[in-house]
Image (cartoon, rainbow, N blue to C red; front, side, top):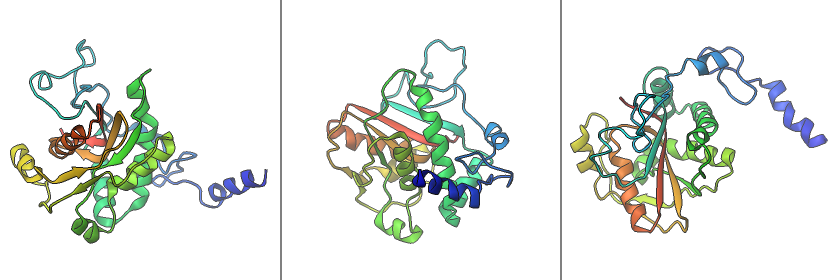
Length: 235
């Protein structure tokens, strides 16, 4: 009984406020219901790469995935990478606004399971790693913050150090798809995760070059199902 009262005290003293409009937030989220509703949600997407498709399309893959080989089995992105999501991600990464990581991860933990219907979620969660030099420069890995909270909310084991970047690469921003693939090639090595299925968490999916390269390394360890979970994707 005492512990229940203690758990409620923080919400009385520090009620949740919406990070976008400063209105009253929801009971467990610093985002009001109106701002959450108005986010740029992706309603119907390709089950392989997460690209938007027509909701009436009977075959649940886009035309590109019918003609390309991906190292991962599924990519799920909840939102389009535009305002206000792009601003929140930028403020998280470059202004160290960690409150955004809590909001974004909570949204992901709530809505990702809806994409699985009656299918099982992956057995293990990890995140896209940063090179030690970039980690030192930024001070934290935003993908790690998001993945750790998702794992806790979903009750799935989290393994933060399964993958490593073996060389420093320049930022992917501003590069086209071919340049991104070349820039990230050979950057990762992975340990054996001892599971059949794994979810790799990142903040934004652009061309998929990074997650494709990382998935190739996990595939070599014998992982059968590799899913990519990102908050948003660029269109």
